[in-house]
Every structure is written in C-alpha cells, then in structure tokens.
Figure 1 (cartoon, rainbow, N blue to C red):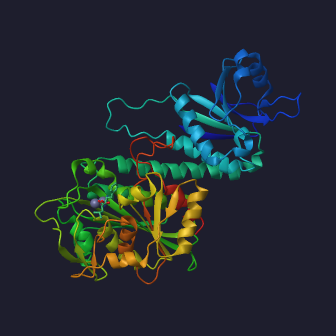
Figure 2 (spheres, helix red, strand yellow):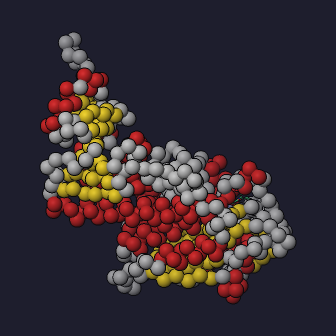
Length: 507
Ligand code: BES
Ligand code: ZN
Ligand code: ZN
C-alpha cells in the first residue's frame, strides 16, 4: 500500500472511493419554542458530494456521531464514505488512529484506489501531526504475519491519496510527516516480524544475522557481534549463565549510530534490549501454559532495535549505542542450577535462586557494558516480569529507573505519541530484599510482592558512574494489544517504539 500526498487539490483524486469527515453540532433546547438540534457539519465537502448526499433519503438518519459511517454513490460511479467524528472539539489524534484502523479494515479488501479529504480531519491547525497519525495507523493496521499460512492475507488496497487544498509551499512539512510515519512504522513492522518469528527459526545466531544484514543499508551505523568467546573475554558471567543450557551461541549485538553533524556536544543515548529468543525458565521450568508464547521474550530487543533503525533512517541528530543481549533460556545438563553463584561483568556475585529470572542476568552484563560506552543516559526495554501485568494491567508499560528527569522525559514522549506508560517506585527497601547472605545479590526478591520494581532494583546494581538510566518493562504490552485496532489482536504489538523515537528526537 502506497500513501501519497496531493496538495493544492481542486477535486478528490480517489478513483473508486473518497473518504470525507463529518462532525456533529448539537444545540440545546432554549425556551419553549426552540427544540434541541443535531446538525451534521460537512465543511470540507465538494458541492457535488453535498448534492448527492442530500438526495439520499437515508442520509437524514446520519448524525455524524463518533463511529457512525455513511456510504453513498456519486453520479460518476465513485463512492463516498462519510466518517462521523462527533463533536469537533473532542477530536484527538489517537481517536483518528483508531478510526482509520477501522476504516482500513472496512475498505482494504474491496477498493484499490481511494482518497482522503485530509483538511476535514485536521485537529486544530495541526495538519502535519494529523497526517502523520493517520498514516501511522494505516501502515500499522496493514501489517499481517502470514508467512507460515498457506492462505495469505489478501488485500486490494494499493493507493491512498491525501488530498488537501493546502498550498504546495506546505509540502515540505507534510511530506516530512508522511515520511516519518512511513519510516517509523516500517521499523515497527520489522520488529513485529522478529517477535512473531517462531523460536525454531529465530535462533540467537539467526537473529544477530538478520540485524547485521538489516543495518547494512543505514548511514552512519556500525555493527559488532560478540559471541561466546568474546563474552567470556568480557567476563559476562551472568549473561553466559543464562546461555549455559543452550545448544546455541549467545550473541551480543553492539550497534552505534553517529549522526552526520555529530560534535562533542551531541547527546549520546544507549538503548539496551532483552533478547531472549525463547524462555523455558531453565531448571526453574515454566509450566506449559506459561511457557507458551515465550518466543516474544525478545520483544525488548526488537523494540530498541526498531527505535534505533528509525532514528538512523531519519538521520536524527543524536548519537545512539544499541546493545541487544540475545540467547535462549534452555535446559540441558550444563544449564545453570538454582543455588549457583555467578559473577557479573562488574565483579558482583549473584546467587541465582530462580533460573526463570534470567532477563535481569542478561541485562545486568549488558548494562555494565553499555556504561563503558559513556552515554549521557541509558534506556533498557525488556519483557522482564509477569508482575508488571499484576501491577499495571496488560495495556501499560512499566517505567522504573534512577533518575526522575529522564523518566519524566519518557513519560512526556509516551504522552506525545499516545502510548501508556506509568512510573513504579524503586525504593531502598527493595535493594535490601535482593541482598543474599552468601553472595552480593540474589536474582529474586525474598517475597514475590513488588516483583517488577525489585527486578529494576537488581538492574540498578549494574548501572555505574551515576549514569541516568530508565527501565521499561514491556511484558504486558509487548503483544496481543487487541484494544488498539491498529495492533493485531494476537501477536507482537510494536508498542513503545514511537515513544522512544520521540524521546530520541528530543534528546
Ligand atoms: N520472561 C519472563 C517475564 C514474563 C512473564 C513476560 C509473563 C511475560 C509474561 C521472565 O523471564 C520471568 O520469567 N520472570 C519471572 C520472574 C520471577 C521468577 C521472579 C516471573 O515474572 O514470573
Ligand atoms: Zn524467565
Ligand atoms: Zn524471560
């Protein structure tokens, strides 16, 4: 599907279907004579649309309420789809994303070439932001993972043109918005593909190979992959302990992006991602039901990689280091046994009491390694704890860390992109709870309450030099976000990439 911009449009360019908006204006009853009225406001319609619409008897029933749609045909055989948006003052970008996701689902099988009267959908005077939100929604909704299905998803939709009376002088801003939507959602859909890939295909080495091939086209990007030998040299005992029961090499993918205009004042952000291509739990084996879908335990790494890829492709003026800690958590006779004591890269000893709390072990060594790259801030993303679902539900990303300012910036970016993120406190007492009597730390708390922030407290032990650090627990939101019509009901969501790109843009 191609999205096009048509500025200075005198008429609608949709060859089969034209999508227009309609708002609802309600007036209350005043006095005895005046009745309450509901008026349909269709200010951006061509004259012929109004005439054809008024000629339909059933059009009188259309009140342009939110979620109300109305189809009618024009004399030339084309169709018009009227999208009811309710009261104009309630228009939000996120509701436009949802509306256009539903529009896509309603039209993609039937029409090849459609147009949208963009000016009628604009929130306030924010036409670029509106276009970007609509385009994001269409690209995200068009995603499907049908690689392993005999019956592929069939769609007819080839071209969507956004018509606007806006002068061609506005082209730069609007084209940039459309391009950003395309770049960011392509990165999100790439991440979704990685997450949806089954574990028998996406082995650790296959994952790193794909990333290496994918970054080859990006300007200013370097890629290094560390295997088992290199991790041993780095003394990444915790990362290696997770991999010790596996038939496949651990892989640490180290990416750097340096913008063309970088100076010594350019901000440097490190992104770190949990890349467990499958989490069986190890000797602390997960029960069958809980093990299902643990292919998605690499979603944190896919998320930070997608943000990295989009930032590099957009040429953002920020230096980025991206570290992906990739392995599976499997069981064989070499697998780490509970009660083992292992040293991390920073020298701290950890009593591993539960091999299913493996993400924090991989991240611990990756965070220590990231600190050595001297970034101004570190952000990690991980499907780290089931506890985050208990605390926040499956719709909200958990945010923790050691720096309020950094966390507030992330929350602002989440707000700006309409993603849900909530801060959980990491109190000193949680630090006491992860102290062991026979090692420096234990990898699980003494009680299971507050599991997400205790895991964050553990990670914080591996962040050095007071580097501002934030941890995103995406265990709840990484997949199956059916409440958002632009996300698949089952499978990878790709959420939080937009938040991270916004954050990087503002760094
Ligand atoms: N990958 C899981 C976290 C997870 C659980 C993600 C459920 C999505 C849904 C992680 O490695 C894990 O198993 N964590 C344990 C930690 C516990 C042993 C302290 C958990 O959450 O149960
Ligand atoms: Zn686990
Ligand atoms: Zn895990």
